[in-house]
Image (cartoon, rainbow, N blue to C red; front, top):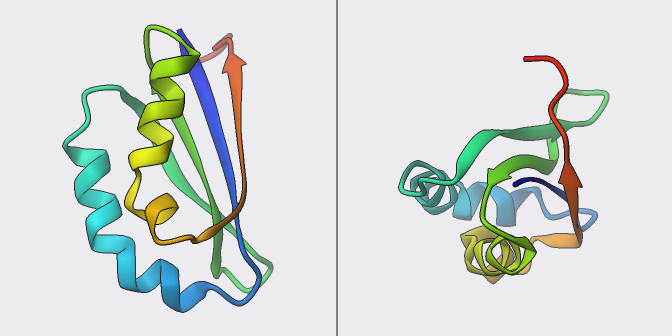
Length: 90
């Protein structure tokens, strides 16, 4: 099943994002369940959140993946939403 992980950063947390970006990218690249991934950007092009499409067996697996993301462990996110997602195009 495809799950959209929608995570919004805490205000003023760009330095936390930068400090943990390398570990986060390594986690993404080391995972076999990533379908697509990238940051949300503000009007100035700064990173302010994440959208990750996971291809997992169930929501429990998506939740476990999200909890182990280095960004989550660093306390970067103000909110994380997991939504079952259906690809129609692409």
